[in-house]
View (cartoon, rainbow, N blue to C red):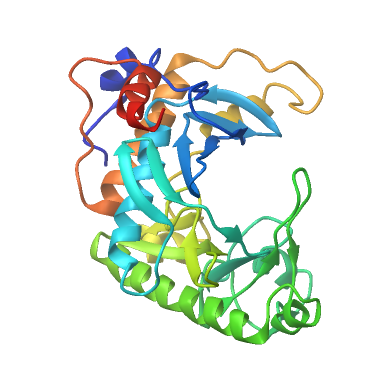
Length: 326
């Protein structure tokens, strides 16, 4: 469990990073949860906000969410740098990474160790419909939900444009469509498997099962393939708790995980979020979600999360730490 509970988080509810607009920085692009600034020298500043996105909307902001995701990724970037170079240059602030600007490859590499998932591109969704050939991999009959696969698989998808949906693709299709060359695909798929093996081994030491994860790769001006975006965060990866896994699966229950979908579930039970106004989200629900993110950070990294003694407005702190880039 987290060392920080709801009560400790309530005083911080008003101190979230909704808007990371910094007028002194150039070439601002705002994504759903990150704000990006491209510097003239080829560096990019990425600010992770606390915005929580669901149903194609920003529902609320979760205290420390941006910091948790940035620092969890930092933990993993530092522990996998011997496997592949990554885009990180420095961390001037807990919510900020300064990185190399890469040309992101048009294939998202998803690695899976278990028969799991609920989305249309998940192998369990397709398997229970009778599919046995998926992503260029042949799956045997008799596999069960939430059980380990015979071997770790790479299940790539195309990267959708804004508002689109990722689509399953096979390695042969990736090369035939010119998305990547055969050599590039070999490099990213082998690298992804090596990253996953490292993540699985280190997560197990902290009582976690790394179930599946996604990786994004990019290319610098010299053509070097590097790891980009994030790695093994609770938003990009599925983790289960080792201690209760066998008992719960044997009983037909879902394995324990970092359930961050409190807000999504609460909203969908009260309205049609695609048509109706979103009701005001209770402070206690926001605090509970923050506690789960912090628990995820502490469990994944094995490090305690330190709350600031005095809440400082997040944007003020970020601006102070980025002044030299103005």
